[in-house]
Length: 121
Image 1 (spheres, rainbow, N blue to C red):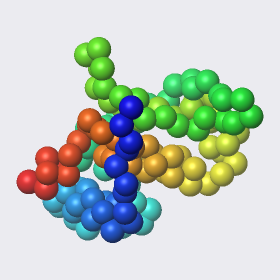
Image 2 (image 1 turned 180 degrees about the horizontal axis):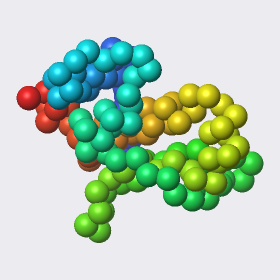
Image 3 (image 1 turned 120 degrees about the vertical axis):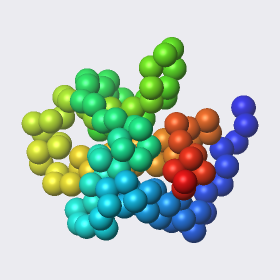
Image 4 (image 1 turned 90 degrees about the horizontal axis):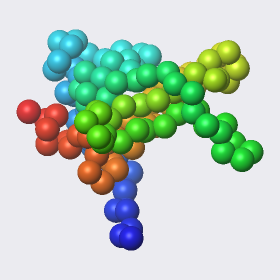
């Protein structure tokens, strides 16, 4: 099994900037706060967000998961619907944080759904 590549902060920031710039080109306006991460994931990276039940790990709640493409299904981000009335309600911003985190997996995972070169055009 090969080791994942080392990611440096400057590389992450560069790719994040390219994704944000691609969204601004698509939307025709600058990004404001709060950052519309769900729209960015879907419109720029073709990475939809869905709510579905996710199994917990021993002693840990699974908030979200990046689902790889396969068997004719596209990649997507899953948010744990079992936590809608608990964690997502209790922790403001958790939904956007989880989507942003999983979007990073979509960008940086080997054989990911998108490459920076495909969004820079």
